[in-house]
Amino acid sequence: MRDLFDLHEARLFRQACRLLADREDAKDAVAIAFLEAWRKKAAVRLVDGSPLPWLLTTVVNTSRNVERSRRRYRALLARTPAAAAVDPPVAPDESGVLASLAQLPGVERSVVVLVVLEGYSEREAADALGIPVGTVKSRLSRAKGRLRDGMAALEASWT
Image (cartoon, rainbow, N blue to C red; front, side, top):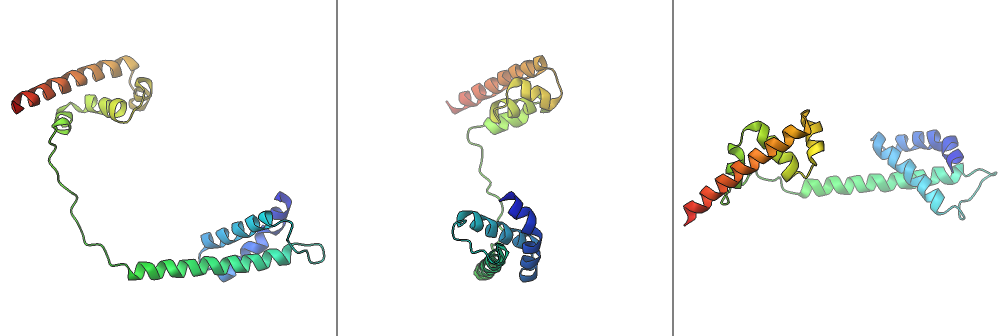
């Protein structure tokens, strides 16, 4: 299959480029043709011992299918009403967690985001931030303490 691809890919690509305006679509059509050749290898008709005519016919058919699909997609987009500009939703942070996180110093906040929210290990966070692992651990400890105090104050205000 590799030899077949190496031998005929350029010619099939030129044929697909003649039929399709977009080079990426032409690449897709060629890939589909070779996939079909692999899938239907027992049914591929050889002409004078070569599968090239069958491959060229398959590229023509897949190019038509790709173009038909693009036309349908463009027609669908044309019928779809344009979305009205909508402001992003603004919801208060009822839990106060985001407000407490925003009050942390930037160096502590970055450690909390990487380790707690994104799930990186302390070593990965240290590598990403370019600081020692011990510094990550101490900043994380301080940040958790500050968040704990902020949440305790918030809970106290509820009662």
